[in-house]
Image (cartoon, rainbow, N blue to C red; front, side, top):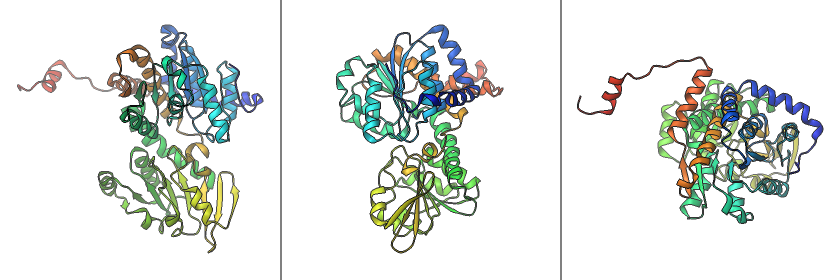
Length: 415
């Protein structure tokens, strides 16, 4: 398959980034050594749609080392790094992606990746899955199953399964403890602020930060905002999560009230129209609007453009919307994932864990897909525990083990 990338001359820069990430991914290093011997994916065709940057390239190379025929694309037009795409193509993996793809180009890249006729696939947000059930439906008979990386993607998968439309088993990688407890909380928490701060060059301390959504990602964003000295306000629709935010010391209120108070707004809900016209009309001059949910639908860009009398790009990844009353609102990264559109995504060590789960979940799916009904399935607990132990080992951290008497006590009732 012929790669579709922006510029192969960027490959040397990409190789350096991939090599840097590889040095800090001990789990994938260990799996690569194991897979090179066992070759669990020998001659299996595999499609990958994940944010295409250095850590993803490392995962793709591990899958190739395990014997797979891999084709790769991005899962967001603004998160693909052209140097990484070129370097990965130069290392013998077909890549179909470039930064800033139009909607049509993005769909063409997804379709080209599926032309490998995958038996297994990795998805991030559900776009491959959706295409397999739509214009690429003819490929369904050959698909054994896939793995889904994100909260938003799993929402789509579960909706499809509930409607009886999901044609194969999907492994809910996002729900694994070693994924959402670490990737969603610590990964999103750090990378969102990395993207905001490197893009704006503004201080966070003393500002009012409004976090929309207090799921695992929202918890991480709020936690890091508090650590940076911000006054944190949380908006929620779930009463239990709202109560949890209160108990964490955050102010909780409806978005319509928070709109008049916030200096920085970050949506992390997986829903649409979280911030819209009524909120824009109440915001302070200079308010920053950021999204950390998978799709660019949480901040209503259409209504923001309709309200504005002028708009311009004032810095890379910062668009100014001037309102008729003189106020200015600033949208970061086109309302796409701010940690990837305006940054490098999650820290390397975090993605080492997440991608280790992906690789092991694929290995499990390769063996067990014929025993699984179409639908959404959990990551087996033994994979979670294996990844946690590998990570602890890489940190030179040891833990206690239960003695036999303790096991009997915990598993019995007589005593």
